[in-house]
Length: 228
Image (tube, rainbow, N blue to C red):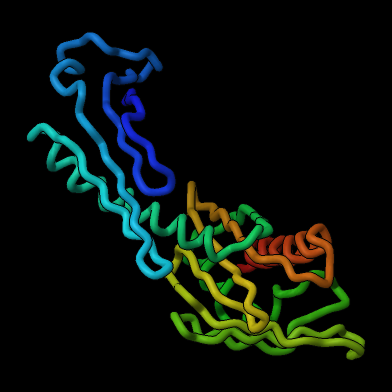
C-alpha cells in the first residue's frame, strides 16, 4: 500500500490516506481502476493513556470485499503489537544471545526445562556445575538452580518467577533482583532457533555477561545434539 500521512499529533493520533498500491515487483500504482476504486480510504489510529496503560483504537474505511480479511488480520496484528510493546517496555536495554540446535522443538523444550537435564547442561565452564534444579514451569511458578564451582569455593542460587509460559514457543520470568529474562523457540526444517534476552546486572560488564550466558547456551546446544 502507498499512503500519505493526513494527520499526526504525537503521541496520540496518526491518520493515513491511501493513494496507491505496490505490486510484487516494487512498482507503485496510482492509476489502475482497482486503485481508483478505493483511493482516499482513511486508516486512523488513536492512542489514549489510561492510568499507565494505553488504549489503541484503529478504524478504517473499507469496501465490503475487504471487510472479512481485515476483521481476521487486524486482531492478530494488534495482538502482536501489544506483545512487542509490552516486552519492550519490560526489557531495559537487554542483551541478546542465540543458538540454532539441530533437534526438533519438542525435544529442545523438554531438555531446556527438565531438572534432570538442567543439572547436566547449565554451566558456562568445566570448573562449574549445577548441583540441583527445580522448575515449576507455569505462570507464577518458580525456577531455582544451585550453581557452584567444582572445588566448592563459590556458589549462588539462580532464581526467578515466571511471568508467562507458552509451551514449545516462549517464556519470560523475573529474577529475584528484578531483572527480566525471556526466550523464544522457533522450529524450521527440524532445527530449533533459540533467542534469549536478559537485562544486564551492574557488577560485570555487558560483554562478560553476554559471553557467560552464550557459553551456557552453547553448552545446551552441544548437550542436546549429543543425546540419543
